[in-house]
Image (cartoon, rainbow, N blue to C red):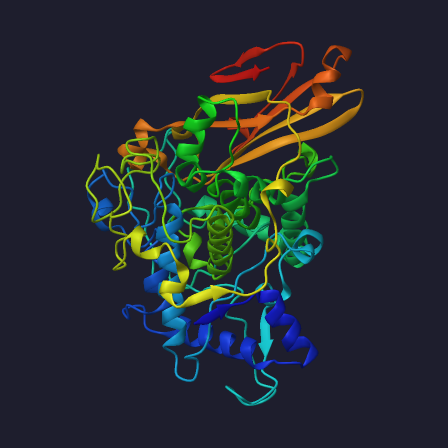
Length: 515
């Protein structure tokens, strides 16, 4: 039974000299893993490519399929990624001398991350071996957890033009190195390369500090009361049923038909992808937003080719396990039959090995891994468990602040008109005070129109609670600022509606207060 520890704990043990070997073994395993030939099925490029690009599967020539194997927006999201992290962990353990390595998690809700951002071992450019246990003492290597250099090209083979007749540009050649906020990784056209060089030259010297500041602000908020991603993680733990907890499609359906607002595990998951991959934290003034940040974690096709993806998803699995423990679901899960989020066409469309318009359940295959969700329910059956984490000991009575029952719903957002991922946020502005009501991060594709089944699920929505004290001051003036932030300034929206209005239409955008 291997124990997955916090990466921060491994880092502390290494820095203090208490026990440097576990981190050294992990880094050595990752370095060897990434050096394997891309044709090796247990290489980093091969496994990373299963999530999206370069693997296209049925999506290579059939737009009924989205392309990669990963599941988003349906009930297989937690279990498929559980099997995925297990496959990567087993690949690391196949490195000679690293048979006892366990995949660590980046504890995104611990005090360190909320106050400092990403642990240093995931952002440092080099790593030094101290002990001589796995490599000669004082050996310095490029940090394999920092980035990844593509050993071959990936090509964007989606439809020839996007919604506004622009050339597709998510092609990346061999030699490309993955980037994170605030940098850009768009290099598919000559114009992209020119803009990316100008952008990266401007921000590269201070990139690490800006990344940590951005992650910190996503986790706990920017100069406004409230906790953003941190609170979402706490809120999702309170959701009583697996179906709504598991994915954003089922969550949206529940929120549209219930007075009790729910937050799915996939919501804060998406937010961290965007925090690392290219979106300035919600609440930042428009003047401070870094336009042009296009990191790989912010795009489904390339997210899994950044090593930090696996430390993020290991934490998602830890949160999933904590939810199972809190709700006594460590031995069984229940999926609501034929509910939104339980069909292969929901959200992104079906993956290879699964036909369009098929119902998903606990016996659905988690291709290409030889598991079903039923086989992945209890992690101890998979021979691993988790060491101490920041959500240990959290109980239901501690999870959510009191809410009024009133909510704001933002809808009418067409994903096909937006290139890549985006955010939907709401802020209350009363008596000169700004309060962040919430942000829904939408982890999308650079070209949604390339997937036929995605076309049937184009509306993105968000629903946020309105606190009691806000309603008590409703007649004193002020309003609610709605912000839809995209990679393209012309498709971004910022609008303030009076708090006394209960419905407003802003172009196709529809905002309703449910009081």
